[in-house]
Image (cartoon, rainbow, N blue to C red):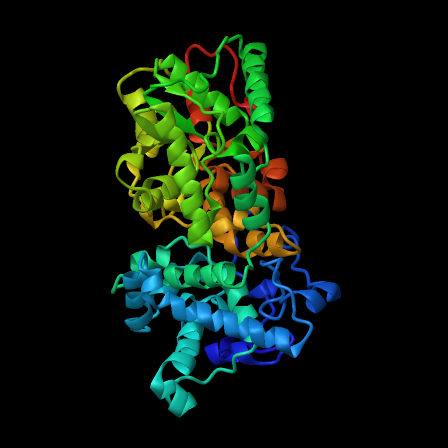
Length: 537
C-alpha cells in the first residue's frame, strides 16, 4: 500500500492489493457536536470475498458491482482491448456530441490544480491524492499517450507514457470514475473553463457502451427497468394508478381535502413529471404539488403512460444511448397528450436530462418545451396565488442547492425567494448558490449501495454537505426540542441527505429534519388546518 502523498498516476498499474487506505484521522474535521470522539461511525475494511471477485484494489471500496475479475489471461486481454477500442472512439467523430469540449479539457489542462480546492471529495478525504480531480484525468492522458501517439509508442516513459496497462489498471480507472459526483464545481473554478467531469463521464461511457459494465442500480435496476416498465422503480401502470388512488384517499383522510389528481388530460397546459421515487419514498411530495397546483388553479395533468410518470433518466450519468432512448420516450408521451409544456418536479438530474440533454437529442416538432418547477413555485408566491402564513414555518431552515439546476442551469433565486417569504428563520449554507457543494449523491451515488459503497458515500462524498448542514445550524444544534429543516428540492439529493442524517443519527440525536420545498409551502398554507410536516404534529 502506498502512502497517499506519494501516489502518482502511473501507480494505477502497480500490482499492489490496494493502492490507498482511508484513515479516520486524515478526514476533514466536522463541526460540533460531531467533533467529539465516538460521534462518527468507523471506517471498515472490504471483505476477503469482495477482494477475490471485485476490484477493491483502488481504495477498498466497490462502486461497480458488475466489474468481475477475469478468470483467464485471455479474458483479461480482451477486457483491455475493448477498453482501448472504446477510448479510441471517444476521440473520434463517433463521439461528436461532446468531442470538442472533451478535446479541450483533455489537451489544455495547465496542471494549476485550482480544481482541487473546489472538489468536496478531495477536501473531505483530507486532500488524498487519489481523489484529486486531475489525478483521474492524468491516468487517462497517460494511457492515450502510450497507445495513440507516436511519441508515446516510441519513447514511452520519456514522454510521460509511463503506465502499465492491464486489467487492474483499467478496473481501477473504472472504479475511480465512480469516485466523482459529476457536480462540475471543478469546471466552474477552472481558469481555462476545462471540465474534468467530461473525462470521468467518458470513462463511464466506455465501460457501459464497450464493455457492458455499469453499476446494477443505475443500469439493470434503473435504466433498463424504466425502458421495460416505464419506471425506474419497476412500478407498472396499474400499480401506479393504485398509488394515485391511495394518495387521493390519504389527502382526504389526513387533511379533509377532496383532490383528484388529473390523469391523461389532453391539451392541459402542464404535464408534471415526478421522480417516481417520490411516490414510493416521499409521497408527501407529489401530494404537496397536487395541493399547490389545485389551490393556484393551474391547468395540469399527470400521465399514466410508459415513461410518462417517471422523469428519471439515469443514462445521463453513464451511457448516451440509454439517455437518448429515455429522453425520446418521455417527449413522445408529452407530445401525444398535447400539453403546452413539461414541468419537472423536484429532481435535479431530471432537470438536466429533460431540459438540456433531451433538447439536443430530440428535434423539431418532436420537442415539447421543458421548464423547472422552481420559477413556477415562486410565481405562485409572488403573484399571491396562495394564501400563506410564514409563522407556520417558524423554525430554522436551510437550503441545499442541487448541482444540476443551480450550478448547471443557473436556477438560483426562485427557491430561495420562496423560502425567504415563508420561513422566518431561513439561513443560507456556506457557501451557497452556484458555489454550493454537491450532496454527495450526484452522478448516481444516491442509489448506489453495492457492498460497502454507501460507507464511502456517507464518510467521503457527503461529508462536506453534512458539515455544511452542521454549520448552518450551529446556533441551535444542541437544542433538541427545536426542529431544524434541510430543504433539498431534489429527489436524488433528498436520498443522499436522508442517508447522511441516518448514518450520523442527526435526526434522532439533534432533531435535524429534511424534505423538499413544496412541503414547506403547503405547511404554510392558511387553508391547512393541521401541520403538513409530520415532525410538527
